[in-house]
Length: 164
Image (cartoon, rainbow, N blue to C red):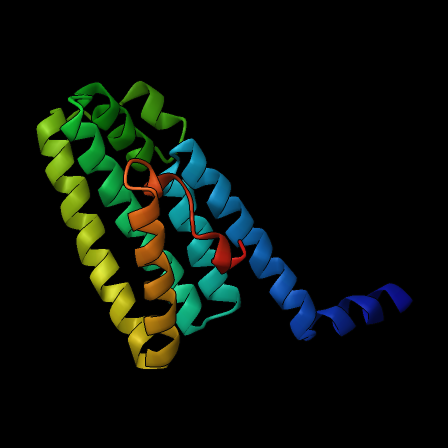
């Protein structure tokens, strides 16, 4: 009985919810560093599910933009095999995919990934703006400075000021 009361007391605790969110964002940061954009997106989506806010929507939009930036970087340095691997990573959902892997040409994969990432980023950023335009402006200003400071690898992390 006491254990049930303890669980219930934490369920509505905003501090506990914030800690759970930071766990999702901490994971997303690691996934970005590893180049695992599928899991980074999923971690940010869990953050939105548990603690929806303008900031959480901005974070997800940023991950989509990081995916787009990484793909553009791979194409620029002529790493088409890396794009194929990224495509497989994004589409891999179960062990069945090991037997029936999704096949696509790297240049087509590039276009598909970037088109999808850009669209999702735009939609997600618009949702953030509907919630709190001032927060969105502040967070985009920070990420713009981040990109300028790290032009050859911004997509593998997030601004320190975001506190992930």
